Structures are given as structure tokens and as C-alpha cells.
Length: 219
Image (cartoon, rainbow, N blue to C red; front, side, top):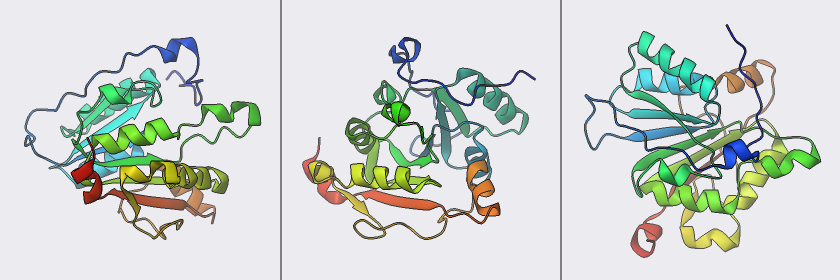
């Protein structure tokens, strides 16, 4: 099988074009069913396990690498997971085109690429504009779940989400301000998390919920 590139530059001209499309709801699911989204899903091991465990939930895997998405669609069909869908997105360009406001119950941002080289760190996915878009797409009480095995990346995510400049979004840290969540609150784990734990390394996890304050005062 053809090998899929592990890394692509999301800032290249090819990926900066706005071309993401809304994810179509598969037939057979209730119109008001829960919606969970894995951002940057890669091989989507987490999404496959989550979709199998929660057949009444629409699970969506989004990624920038279209060959990866194509393989995932084939696997989902082979496993009969009618509640699992995949779509292209460049998170910092066109995630706003994929979901309607207030329509997502939970976003999972699991082990985003750390882009360790200093010259590459501008490619990291978390930035204030993305957080604002994700919160707008969450339902009241919806959750942003993030995890990384790189402390600096996890701390950068926390610093961005909990920046006082974004306080108006009404995101509350379920572990308490500037606190990481211990353990995995979900029975499913991504391939990266499984590897990290096998090595005896730590996962730095955060859980944020969209509070009623935003539901009342937000757009």
C-alpha cells in the first residue's frame, strides 16, 4: 500500500485555499443525535473505537491529508460503521465551513503535531481564532477535549484557551483553572496515546466545557 506522508505544511498555498465542505449526516441516525469530532484524526483509531462503542452518536474524523481520509472511509465501510464520517479540513482555514453553530457536542484534539523545530512552530494548530470557531460550533454544555504527550504543546494549548482575552467565550476548565485532567475520561484511546502509555510516559490532558454564560450572552 502507498505510504501516506505523516506531516504536511498547513501553511502551503495548496492547503490555504478554502475548500472544506459540510459533513453530511449518514442515514439512519436521529437528527438530534450527539455529534463528536476528532480534529486531525490521522488513522482515526480513536474515532473508530468511539463510533463502535456509541452507535447512536455521529462520530466525525477531520484531517488535512485526503489520502488518509480515503483509507479511513474504506475501513469504516468494511467495519459497517454507518455512524462514522470523514472530511477534509485545514483547521486554521476552513473549519467554520464544516459544522453549523451550536451543533457539536464534543471536539477531540488529540496529540496535535508538536512541530518541534522553532522555525516550524508557526504551523501549530491552536490559536485564538480556532478556539473561537470551535466554541461557536459547540452546543451549550459542549466540550473541547485536548491531549498531548509534549508538555510544552499542552501548556501552549492551555495558555491559549485560558488567555483572559478569550474569557468572553465562557470556556470552563473541568479540572480547575490552569489544571490538567488526570487519566482518560473515555474508554477509547488514540494509537499515539496507546504508544505513549506503553512507554510509561505521561499524557497531558485538558477538558473545557462551554458554559451557560456563553449560551446566554454569545452569538
